[in-house]
Image (tube, rainbow, N blue to C red; front, top):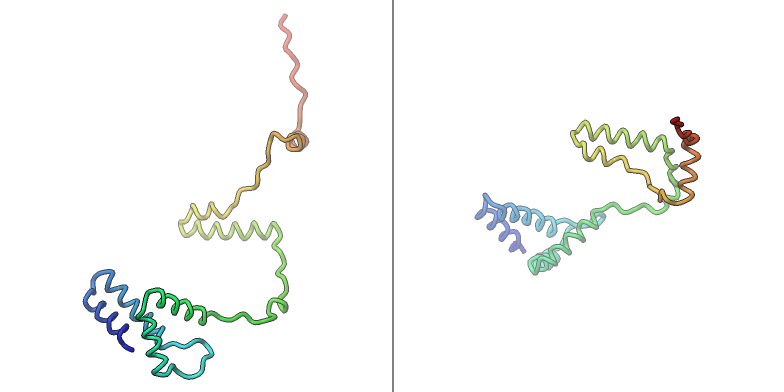
Length: 156
């Protein structure tokens, strides 16, 4: 039952100064969690038989290790409470002014942290339209004051 833990500890001791030692220590603590921790809400502890079966499965392959790890992480997540979304209801949508204020506050915070590129990325550009379309030309003409064309100059 202790074989995965003993192997990881021996690897960590033999390779203290390199990445293999770091990975071995990480594996040691992850394997310890997989062997000893139970899902939230479970009663009691693992029996010796269960722990031996888990240690054997843990030692089989990296896929089994990752499968056990994902199961443990999934069990650790809080379960959604049924009906909570109905009790809260839909959140009201932000007005355009509130949305822009929120974006400006985020950009200011990022600039304060020295992240100018991320701050600039907060502001999303508007959509563009096809400027050659008749609707776009008409809208542009109504929004822009138009003057009469200049009179030709008489040279004479």
